[in-house]
Image (cartoon, rainbow, N blue to C red; front, side, top):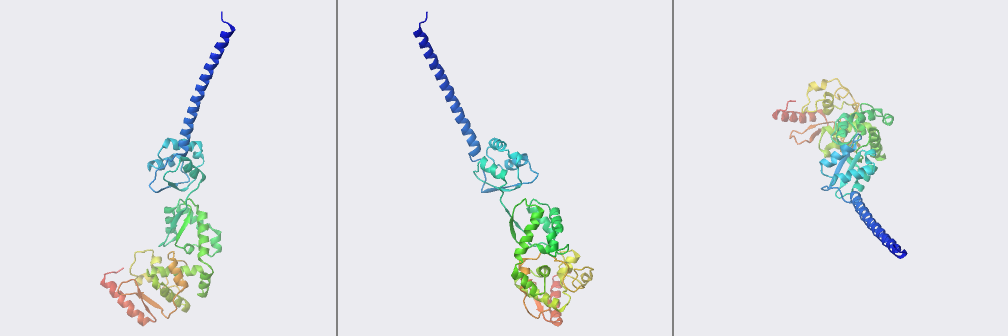
Length: 358
């Protein structure tokens, strides 16, 4: 029969075992917790992107998580795909996708990357355009470089009330756009793009430029129209002010401008290298051989060089010019028809010698 002392000893031994087991379980749970914590920490904070330099991802408005994963995985940007997807789901990223252009750097953690994507912290892009003839061509260029489509751009331009108040219409909308490099968000919508261009237009047409236009008895839009002709007359920036001076002399005398580039625009065949008499008969408001004054709109989106050449046109007594016979791209200028006919004959002979008939 067990004594009280033996019961007491058994109780103490049992408690020791329970304590040992409890301590063991505690240690196991602690180790397990540390292991889980380390695993979670690694999934969240360990670098998980590999890029050579910086990697740009463009997320469209209708992209879902599967499409975004395909873009990243196909370019091997994500090192551990499982951890990326786990953190993405924990942060509810599939429900908070934001379109835009995002720059991913080498060694970014899942948390850093997904917080950037989830918050829409995108990087602006540089949008550049030049050598554009029509607003439709510009809309196509925008379509190529930004998310917005060309039809939306054209619609936004033509329906913008501010542009109408500024004097723009279907013939001269191209005058709004100043060829340059602009920094903007890749997913900018059409209306905001037009607002951006209006702001840039107003910045460009500062008080100094507007005063110069006024001194020429021209509006800003008219300066752009004339500049577009100058732009298509020469590729030589140095002689643009002299050519502009010729046309201003003609405008002041109310003479026909007789600008060959306006005929090319009216015909719509931009491969023409030699304007013929038959071209001068085309029935078009852009035919400056028939209609006095400026055409109703620009024949291209003029460069800044050409606009400033008009605003700073050379003052001289030239009323005529034609390409030099040495085919250098420069022009020979004349004060009267006699001088001009001599220059023109030399150029015609040079074209004939090279067998350039049209």
